[in-house]
Length: 100
Image (cartoon, rainbow, N blue to C red; front, side, top):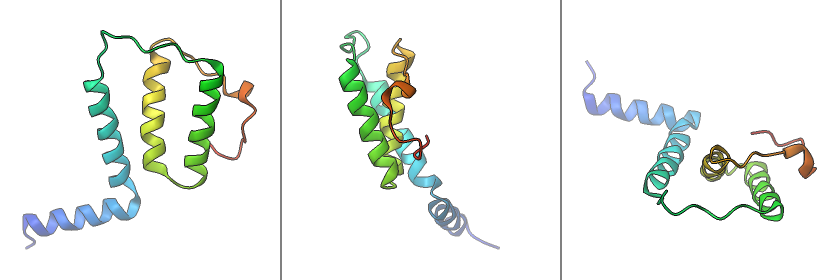
């Protein structure tokens, strides 16, 4: 019978091979930063130019397979959208080859 340590090692290896572990770590990191974010001080509004820059950075990260870094950016962007900033990705004219 396998020990708890062996089961943990197998589970960790499986999650790493599937790419799930890195995604979970990135998501936890984003949630920690979100929890630490001072909500009493609102973020400045995001200009269309900065929104475009953020989308280009996200596309670059996803194109180069920086999935975990992109997931943190997407989580941050999602929080901003929930605070009233909607995205109109079609108006950005970015490449359709990279999907979220």
